[in-house]
Length: 379
Image 1 (tube, rainbow, N blue to C red):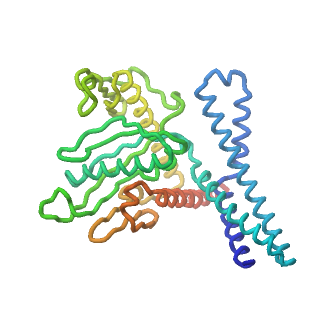
Image 2 (image 1 turned 90 degrees about the vertical axis):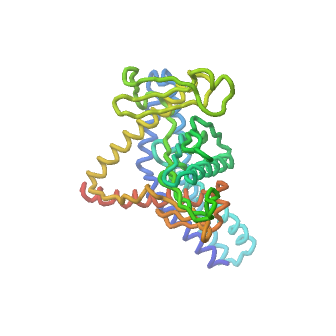
């Protein structure tokens, strides 16, 4: 037992070292100091949205650093206690240490997720859009299946799902659907799902019972807490109203409650028709447009950074990210990380955390690897 516990503690120590590298402790302390100075400045509470965002970010940074330091200290204390228990052959102390090591490992997993979700918008709620690709009716049915999968995943976490817009399929399913997932870190988790999802199965819509391959795209955007994060000038948008289609009752279908907003400089178009009033649909559409414009801004910045670093990213990364095979065998495989699950139905019922965690971990490792050459060039 001594050998096993020592090995477990060594693995925990290695994980803590990796987390410490990803966490950038010195950088986080500087950020805490900066945020504290901002909070102490006169007029801080004059912008409530900004004040709340800063307060939440500061609390998250403090909690993450405190957890890292506490777990590092506990790991070293347990190593000392284990040496003592071995020297004195104290079985009672050994049993106590075993329980503490187990709890430490669980706390470490939670800390790891907090560190992995360290992006500027990872704490935000998410706007998810699914689009049917190649595959006709099967692809539209596949969109409905994915919508159900993400809804189940969100419900299991206690997140709220709000439908923003949908377009029914010709025979079954959905051509597209946009929905909001409200909950802490929803965007941080769900951005791991961005890309093309592939389904292989015996088509229920094929009388000959042939195997079909269908595709659907998943796009994920953060819900912005501060309206000032991206400025949308009134003269830069065109707002069109029309009658909503689909379910929604007499009011929805007989009045021009649906809203389409076009951002003239970029050509980005957003439609929302799920709310009962035109004003509510316009507010929801503006929220989506703001998220799309932020996403465009981030992608432009990432492209510029990639040029500066001389990075060559694979086109496949983030395109066809995952395959769900129901026939001739059962397997879900993530092509980015290699993670596989044999229970396809469980995955379609919302059990996607293994894929999300593996992606976030791979992303963090890739980020650290890309930062090393940049640091070396800066010397």
